[in-house]
Image (cartoon, rainbow, N blue to C red):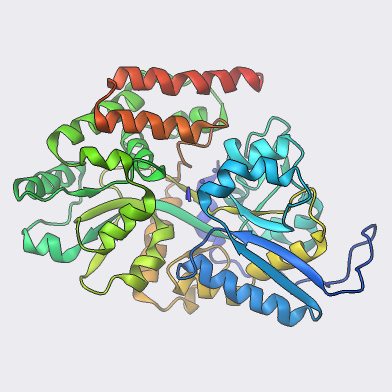
Amino acid sequence: MSKVRTGIAALAAAAMLTAPAACGSAEPEAGKAAASDGPRVLKLWHYESADGAMGKAWAEAIKQFEASHPGVKVQFEEKAFEQIRQSAGMILNSDEAPDVMEYNKGNATAGLLSKQGLLTDLTSEAAKRGWDKLLSPSLQTTAKYDERGVMGAGNWYGVPNYAEYVMVYYNKDLFAKHKVEVPKTFDEFTAAMDAFVKADVTPLAVGGAEYPAQQIFYQLALSKAQRPWVDNFQLYKGKVDFHGPEFTYAAETMADWVKKGYIAKDSAAIKAEDMGVSFMGGKYPIVVTGSWWYGRFAGEIKDFEWGSFLWPGNTMSAGSSGNIWVVPENAENKDLAYDFIDITMKKEIQNLLGNSGGVPVAADPAAITDPKSKELIENFTMLSGSDGLAFYPDWPAPGYYDVLVAGVQNLINGSKTPAEVLDELAGPYEENLADIGN
């Protein structure tokens, strides 16, 4: 989902804003071809699970869109995150492009496609429909990309309508069974994992074959980082030393965690879905992953009590606005796409998202009544209010996601030293830095 950002402190205020005016007309915009004799169709792609917070919210948005657009049908296709990530460029450069789709934010993904001319410039639409007023400057970081494809400035190429962050989920029953206290500091966190290891319980459910393991790596780096380091790494504002204290600590500590038994060696081959299912099955006491799992955990975990907390000791965490709606340049029905995006911003949809375990950007705070959802949003508010959102480690360069997956897998299975892994992470990053002219 991978399932991610300057001026972040204003994010908390975004959740207090109201949605813009009702969605526009279903009639084609000036300059667009007239509709055919048959019914018009909005082709929509996203990769949220049907029982997750965003999946529930977008399903309701589809119903409201069809109700408010007589004669228009939504042709929805659920795509896998990896499927869109790997083939988006090719698909969007063809006549098979959808009208609107969910896409990952950041330089390596939306930024790259905007630079290639594959995404519609939404700047005028954002002003027309009030999206530029609804979303705080920090949320707009992942909506805007400059001519180099670097986020945070330039034109609008996407619209985020939820937020997300990485946290620690824990199985309260397993903590109680083994008499482990919920940690409040990093030392207490490692002590808790030591206690589980002594009881022959592997503490962490980890998905090394996809995004989860690299997010643990990034959380460790952030524990030694300050905001300027994040801005240098993510926004190319300065030089990044891959053998500096931040990444060195992350690589060495993660390798050490495998040796200590916190992370199973076979987790290098585990995918994110299998990781989440193993936690839901009660096999592991801890999983470190994003808020996008929150709604699913709330809906599917029936056999034990669970909770969550921010990574102990960190002032920053992986997190950002959520993935963004983009309109492909080759889309046939851009006017319908804009209307659908508008509906997902409506307070009613945002409230549903918030009560289903998501982090809304335009909900009525008083309408969020679910206790777990309140906990989720309160933790996010605490993090964002202290300028604590640090984006995601795979964002800076195209193809960097795969580089990180391979690097962290090497740390888990011990096939390369931490120093060798850091050399491999530095190479593609420096190449992209040179490519964009920095």
